[in-house]
Every structure is written in C-alpha cells, then in structure tokens.
Length: 504
Image: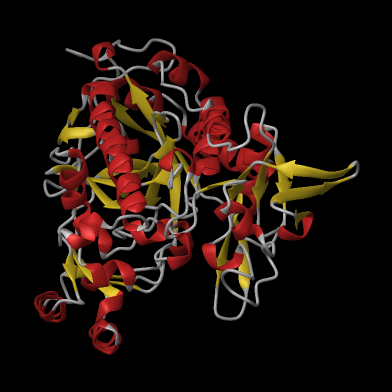
C-alpha cells in the first residue's frame, strides 16, 4: 500500500497548502501493522508533518540530492566516525545520518520524559539497595541468584557510599513505538554512548534545513554539555569548584570521538589511565605544572579496566589504586562501578516490579514482554518459537550475539539454539516488535525505515532529560536492527509543540 502525501508547505511559509502528490513519495510503503511517524493513513499526513512534506516535495531533484550530501560532508568535516569491529580487523566509517528529521509532539515527549525520570529514580534506588541492605532481594521481588550471579555485579561495591546515591548519572534507555504506544526496549547504564551523534545530527540538519528548523521551533539539545557538567559538579565530595576529568581508553576506542567532543564541550580534561596517579588517598592528573587533584571522574571505561588492583589484573587502561580512593569517598565516578547489574537484560524483566517496590507507582513506560531462558518455561518457549522471537545475550550490546528469528535461516536458528542450550542463563527472548517507521531519503526518493529513540537522562542533584535523543534508524530495507555496527544510522529527532499544529 502506498501513501499519497497531501497538503504541505515549503520552508518559507509553514502552514500553507502545498502539492497534493509527488513522485518523491511514489514508492513510500504504508503498512497498517506499523505505526507510521509521518502518515496517519495512506494520503493523510500527520498534522505536524505537512510542512516537512512540503519542504521535501518543493525541492528540485538535484537540490534534494545535495541536501543529503551537505549533511554527509558536515559529518565528514567534523570527523564523526564509528568503528566496526570484525574478526580480523576494525573499520572506521563516517556515521550515516539521514537528512529527514523524525517529528515528535511535545505531549508525546512529555510522556516519555516522565517515564524515564521514574525509571532512573527506581534503578538508582535498586542499586543503592542491592549494594546495601538488599531488602528487595530478601523480599523476593527480584531473585537473589539473578543479581548476585550477574557478571556485572561487583561485590567490591557493597557498603560503598555513593555521592547523592547517584549510581547512574548518565542513562541512555532505548525507546520503541508500536501501535501499543511507547515502550522501553532496554536500559544502558554502564557507559552509554551516542550523545555526540545526537548533537552532531542536530547541528548538521539545522544547517541543511535552516528555515524549516526555525519554522518548527524545535526544542533545543545544545545545552547537553552544560547540563552534564552541572550533574558532575553536583557529585563532588570535595566542595565547590571541583576538578573534573573524562577518562577514555584512548584513540582506538570506537567512541573516542565522543569522549573528546564531550570533554571539549564541558571544558574539562580528557585523560587516559597513564595520565592519572594515586598519591595517598587522592587521585591526581599529571599536568605541565605538576600534579592536580581530581574530584570527579566521568569514566568511559568499563568496570573491568578501571583499576588493575581491584578488577582485571591485566588492565593497562586504568589506574592502580583508583577504586580505593573511590571507596574512601575522596572521588566521585560517573557512572558508579557495578551499575551494569541494573541494565542486565534479565534484570530488565523485573524493572516494572522494581518501580512498584521503591516508588509505589505504576510504570509510566511499559517493558517489552521478555522470556528468561534461565527459567525452564522461558527456555522452552524460546526454543519452540525461534522463528518468531528476538534472542539477546544478557550482557551484550551493539547488536552483537543476538538472533532476529524472522530474518534468520533455518541453519542459523539451529546453531543459535545450541548456544542457548549450552548457556541458557545468558539469553533472553522478546517478541519481534512491529517497530514504528519514519521517512528516509533513499536514492532520491522518500522511503520508510524502522526507528527507535535513545534519549539521555542526567541524574545528580536533579534529574533532567534533554528533549530529543539519538533517533536510530535501520537503513537496510526491512531490517529491524538499528545499531550502527549492524548497518544502522541516525536521524535528528525534533520535539515540536502540539499547539503549533492543532487543527492543521
């Protein structure tokens, strides 16, 4: 079924009638099973999308092509890349960004925001509890063996005082939409990445569509760096005007661009492990003027590698003695070690119960139905329905070690079933979701592709959510995998006011 775009405007005059149809949308597929972000029905654009459709359809074909090229050149000029790791080599690629923004109404965004703030509050209470009194485990709300046996549970954190009890200061939860509404697909609480791509998307798209952007009065995201800095400052255990540094694994890390970008945005030092040293009970960075104390460390390094004396003995990326400084309360870290136990994909299934337990509230945002292969019923269901479910490893991210059954061959499903049977506790299964679709510019025409959204929540003395997020898109036609490492890309997410488009 094909949508026939109607009534639109150009970017100079938002709100005026435009062309009734355009070859640009001639191949646009509208399917009832998916929520379409642009069309409510074939030939019926959503009110907030009329102006965007008009801007697209009134551009000459050569100008439309140059629009995407301008976006690509902007990203290339800024050096915005990511790394795909293969079996034998790694490949550096320019981050793919589609030039057609995804539009969300403020009322939709405010629902998402309420749900995310609620979720981060509950997850921080959960972490403070499991590393403290563990009442939620004693009460049987979450199985103790699931938590204590999680690879990301850190016994070393038991009894450690965390500033403001803010175990998670930066959270990037993945939000999907189906006809049932918005849901949380997973939480990213350890070292969530992608915010630099969100900011780069915004900068590139705003430059490419200046009048359209101004006409929509899009809510800003540029304040992210300043808000993150305020959160980090609020964590300091050593008074006002704290010294803050961002710890990176180095230039070969896939997210190094983001590390350097954020350090620059906040005006803080970007350091590697060998730039830091422990003297007495304090952490210091080496500078040309001698040692300078560090009060807050925004670490973009996994738990295992931050301190070879506390975690992996063979790590050369961290700082010997760092964890002891942290344990004694002379350093704040964001995010705190051990937060990964709360974004484990098996623990994820219990988040609605966690919210009810600590907040005595119903979850604002629902979870996706999840089957735990560690449980006999969940294992049986997964193996019987491999052709219909998505199977994920509980501790993996980035689209690795997962099976999308509907797109897998019989041989692939058979091989994956053996992996599940060999280690059932390592896997969960979820239904194949009918992810919403949004318009993308593909070879000079607008086509629909599946999308999700990763908003970023900042939690310290206050909790804030930047209005928007990284809208990830499955650029391969029919694909449901949005991860850049698996062929996905991104688009800008615009939060626009409902009242601007009411009745249009």
